[in-house]
Length: 454
Ligand SMILES: [Zn+2]
Image (cartoon, rainbow, N blue to C red; front, side, top):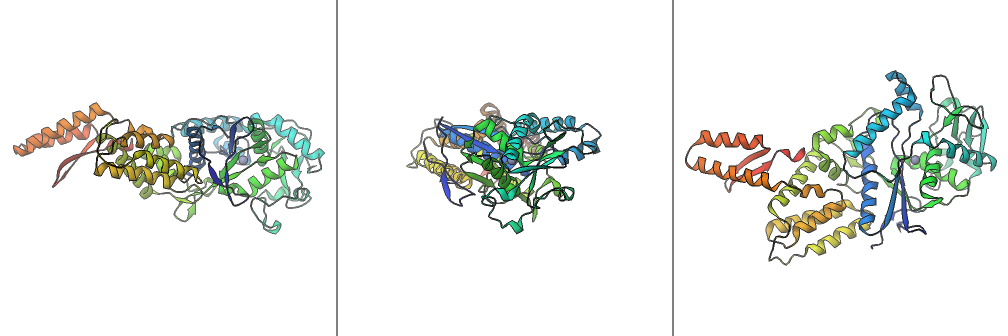
């Protein structure tokens, strides 16, 4: 079992992931607010934290991943109203769509996916505790967190208080003791059709509080890793720390943030209207290329998204699939290259701040070696490495269909040699119908799968 080190946003240092007393590595990652279909940018934390769990499990850790769903929110009220449906119904539909879209990534589900609307009791209890402790106060049916009552405020985002803007609606400013304070509970307003009773009247939770409650309910008062997009460091995660620590919890022992997915210079965020839906990307490029693209850069760096990057990912999947077409499992070899050593370097890269590009480089190095000389065990090692990344399906090439296509290709060569070009063209069409492109070169004709992106 390797020590897995992650650069901790709070300390700014690489730190080892540590299991709790029961031997569980608890990972909490902030999930989507379901007011529309999710875009490729939302898929990045889903993929990064799903694969972190998968890697930890392959190393022998017992990992538990929790990803929440924010299903009550201002944006959901607005979207439901313009769709002309009750907000609860709208949120339910969008939650199902989120499950369906992320299922298609083929990485399994998180171990728990709590909904905000099903966590109300715990949310009210924590807010009550904060009010009792003097860290929160009721004003006009809302409840606000008293930021200056918590000494550690700002330690995650390293901002000075003058630079802090909670980004809350202007209407709440008059109710706050201090502009720095943020909402825990909001009184029901006209047109908001989802609400609950509370000690402060009818209302609904504000955003940040749900994560403090869900993380504790699912993983305990202290857990190994809290993750999410870098755009959540302030105010969302700063506020989670304030809520939980002010209530005496240890909370997350390590903070891990992924960079944003960008199109051109603009950040990909739904509110900016620059949308590329995950389902659309999956339709167009296939799950393997989408997953490979999302781990092609280091998780902490921004990731440029566009047709060019996706074509590159598709080409890499094709390269891997072609490798499995030509390198059978169990094939003997004479090369000195040691696939096991490559595999160790691959795992070391993942253990070193989850460096997926460095890990992928080991996969492609071994593929390159095996394409030059017969490396015994190369196919197994490549398949094992891809398995850690949820991509071993690439190894499942259809050998029977491949053999039939190769036989047709040989027949076409014979037809061409006999100058029967009509027959040769008919075979080319037949191969295209079966998903193969024939590429002629001075070295002879080869088959390239057309369906690799499917
Ligand atoms: Zn959160």
